[in-house]
Image 1 (cartoon, helix red, strand yellow):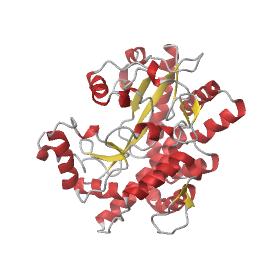
Image 2 (cartoon, helix red, strand yellow):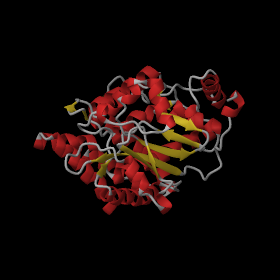
Image 3 (spheres, rainbow, N blue to C red):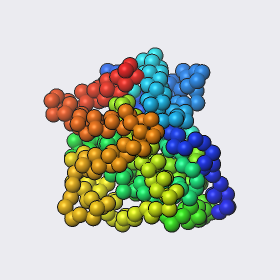
Image 4 (tube, rainbow, N blue to C red):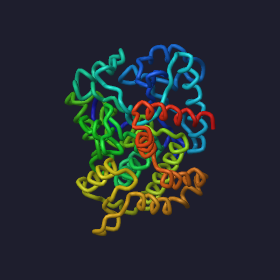
Length: 382
């Protein structure tokens, strides 16, 4: 692919700040609550409007769903409720259940089969053990931006907020049956992937395109979708794609996080359009804050990079501060109610907190997996 073709994009072709969400679900045995390799039977049963919305992933125990383009988080909630209800019914017909979280509490990657598709076989051939152990589940949120230049400048501004978004979505405190001491062990597993983690800061879209172009021309990657940063421009969709989040268990939490992200994109887009400078922070500092959140969740004592104070604060306090900045933008977007769900997450805790409470009460790792299915499916019935 030539360098010029990397610059091709559809930024600005859709309504401002429209949203899309991708979720990766685990397929579960309803008796043992271990993962089951049921993706083929699940996909064989799809019909009608859902045919384009359900897809395989790297392993046969994983199902990916994608919403259509939505005007805002309320519509995201409607679409996900419909999709989760359909997946739940389909799973029961196929003798399984499903759940959403960043990791399965006890399943082993060695027991999972790789999906029989060229893309996944090639990925395993390239990455070997790193790909074979990638038994993790994420949620991605897309938000439309107005131009290629805005995609890079808004991305730069979002980097400092990545720990907040991870904290709100953390749902992977267990790995291979072990209580890891982390709230997002998914982050530690995925960090072994090349071209992952906090993205570099780009001066402009031309620089981003040049980097992607060199990686493609030299055969390091097939295309830019093999760059797996925590957030990235997606030129073919005309969006910024948020990738840092663990798969989220409660549907209402997905909606709140989508509202938070959409309002952030709007805030930063307007600052870029007004010619305001987007502050820059050293990657070592933003990466440190992300690590602290992966370790401690909402109670993480992080650096307040935006004020430069030497005293650390909880990431929950930074989230509340950001919400206050976003409220007028959410009001203009008609998503004030959905943004209010962020305070509910802060008050109740994340899926990681819920899983840890379930473990403390039962000391039964199987019960943790069962509760994940119950909480995930509850959103489809609301």
